[in-house]
Length: 142
Image (tube, rainbow, N blue to C red; front, side, top):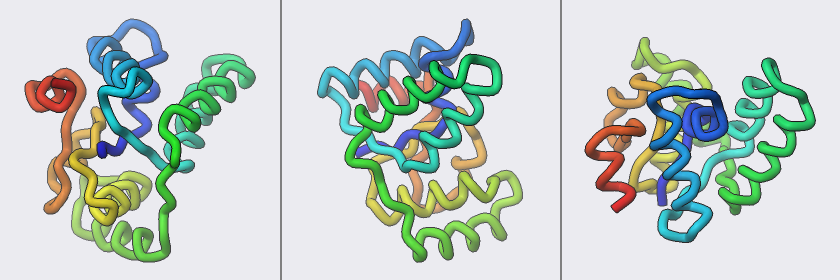
């Protein structure tokens, strides 16, 4: 099982960008059943918030619902994840608090990888970070 970060969801439905096609391929693979992925309600919430800043709220909410269904069952962030995430946040200056908690959740759920364009995840020990468009990403989709 892989865990998706907000960046993948945004690139998959966003405008032209070098990470759009890899992100879209991953979303399509999940929808087609050839990839198993999850995320958290918080990631879907962040997606809707960011996507909805530049597009109609109805469109953002529709995409959010679609992602929630596609990535069900959504992972639940526990109090332990929050505690571990805050420790990761303290130790990793390039990792935001939101991402630190997502990393802790991915580690706890024994995810095969966390897919994100955010390079801050790469420094977290015990977490396999895979960026869209990389060789590791292609292996994940194979």
